[in-house]
Image 1 (spheres, rainbow, N blue to C red):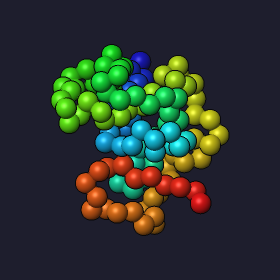
Image 2: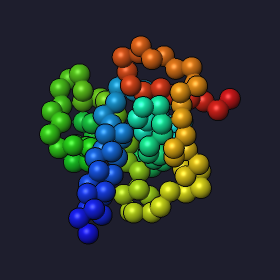
Image 3: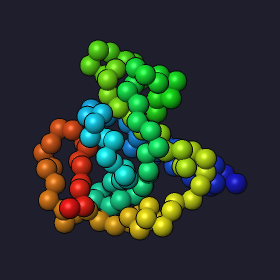
Image 4: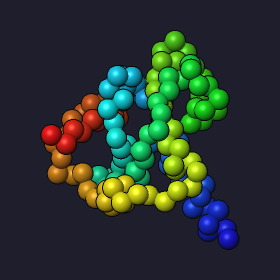
Length: 121
């Protein structure tokens, strides 16, 4: 039982870390189908955003309640994945990405923003 509780806790921490709060364009995020959590070039989490929020619009749904909003951060974005929050398993597309490496992708490794948009075309 203790192992299951620890896994649930770590999954929640991972979800909250991946879902925000990010400096991103509200228009650009509307086109995002999946958000991938990456660690050491491996995809360790996949989420499908149901909705995106600016921090100042949904303070009660922030990934962490200790986030202090300032004029610099109040317009940063975060998402909610309703399916994940309701405990549904990964769908076939989400499952496909888990464990895959992104090491061969040509990404700007020196970018200060930890967000990278990948388009399939």
